Length: 496
Image (cartoon, rainbow, N blue to C red; front, side, top):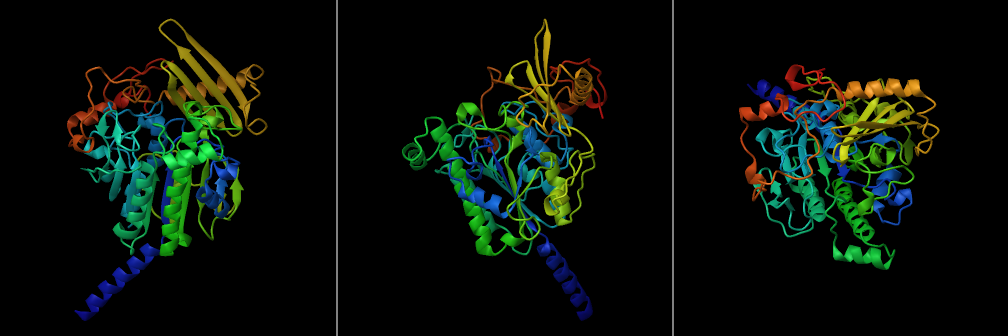
């Protein structure tokens, strides 16, 4: 009997030791951060904590998100191309019923199975109406934050409904949202997590996404010291506040002595929006566009002792690579049943070894104007950007072909002199687009006139019903695409 108890004790001890040996993970996601808007990029906005990450880790100079919020978050969670998820074209609005299908496996679910404690603090934005779509039912042991976008930083309302909760329970907090995100991240690290387990902490901040709101003392700082005009002054204050929240997280990791065993990834979900003060120089374009300024984003990865401090890489990296790379770094198994599109790029970070991508990267947005699409394909250094304007009478496609190796700022359009290359890449884009479900997400500028926001989004989450599954495969809205419709399995135009 004593021998059996000893064996059980030793097995438990060894299992616990192996779990705590695994590195912790902190993923911090900025929202609409301009490429040029950090101190280490030369900005007048003060970001000492993010600058510290850059000096202690590796700057990922060619990291690609998608041009809009929802597809980036979908790709991060699944390691799959948002075109297959039905979320490639637009951001999910509070009045829409969709999200990423419950059939898709999410990153925190794999980490949960590997013994990690998982938490999310911040903005979700990939499904809200049904239990199987919300964070604490998709692999996060702890969720504190918002289900929607465009959340007021002080009232915590989105489209007229209250949107702040903890694990499905509505909360009232009289404080600035970015401050809350920093405080709650520290609370998880100090009070909520089990110190015997490794942890995955995902912090998708609201900042610096609109509405443009910032603490008065920070706005005054950028008025008096830099004389920034509105809205740049507010935007700068929001970025400053975001950096301070990140500083609180870094300080707590240091205080607990776990920084050296913690992988930190910081990046933005898309480029900055110029109308609100975001600057993406030296790159062309911004949020909602597929030029480099909309998709090439700030990204930093720190892992003391394994990633060289103060280093940089020009490796092409996609947000779809995050899940497989972190799985490889921690030695956990990915439980995806569906084929992933991301790749493990750990060697590019720990060994400074360039890795060739086996497949091109694709990007889409139909948010700049209704019935106007911005598309792109990157294959090595070759990049094709297509702007498609179409209505009931005509379709006009403008092609922009660039060599990013010689022309990363996209100044020299090579399309006219390379018609065969344009044709080949255009065909590849059309084939890629044909994978999008007909019932997938498209731009929705305003709700149906009869729609009213729920009083509280936490209380509006419904139990799963058969109707939810119909929304992924049913013949909903007709795809607003320039291609021949070929309906296949599960309502896809062409099913992979």
